[in-house]
Image (cartoon, rainbow, N blue to C red; front, side, top):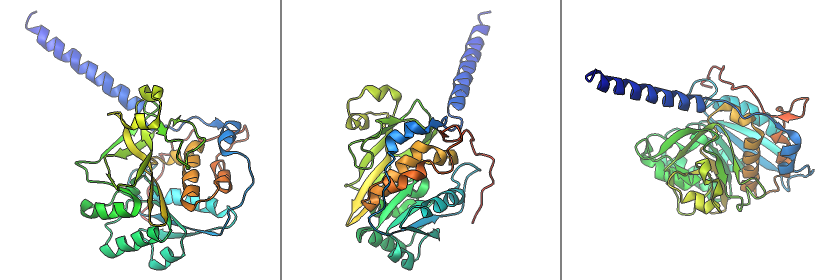
Length: 319
């Protein structure tokens, strides 16, 4: 009996670990947020009719899809957003695969990028940096901040503000509602929005960051809800900073996020709201002309906005 006790203890501990592991897997299983009543979202978007103050040329940069279906669907998301953006008056949209040409950079007012960035040459990095410094805007989504190998990651950060340091230093993790997204609602891109929003997605942190990068969104434990300010949240050891960031270089503005792993996230009205707010900020425009896109194609006949589909049943494409 005495000899069996250590073995029994080991078995009990093993079972407990398996149960905790199973709970974590269940909690972090891919799942979209429940659809939300349109009237609730309208409180944040407003219902104002407005037009952009100038003609805007958007360049959408995408690449070959590199995960299983429903994750990093770069082509799928491009095909979702490009037609929507074209419905905004005074907006035209061009597309680039892997990296733009100089002619495309010259015409673009803002670059929206969602891809795994290829290993850029010194010439390409200079093209990119010059685009931003002369006044080009950038919206950088999820893995777009990663360029491998990481030997020129510091130069890439000069273009967009943040970049991946390498697998030994930068971190990534899925998150669920127990780790909400905290927003700096004092920043113009997020003013008037809720202090925190919940998603089921993924983010990166411990990135290379330029000195004038401002963290405007962080993933952190819900226990920090009682913190008085966003700066207090950032000071927490458990905060995953730079889930969203803002960066200015020369005359250009960059709005970046490390979130946006799952395709269903792009069908979430709150996530679309964040992206459209960021796009408007990079252009120094009123966000109102972009607000219809928050609802487009995801509002049902009951007035609910969003999706219940995890969207994992999809075959990735290279082009």
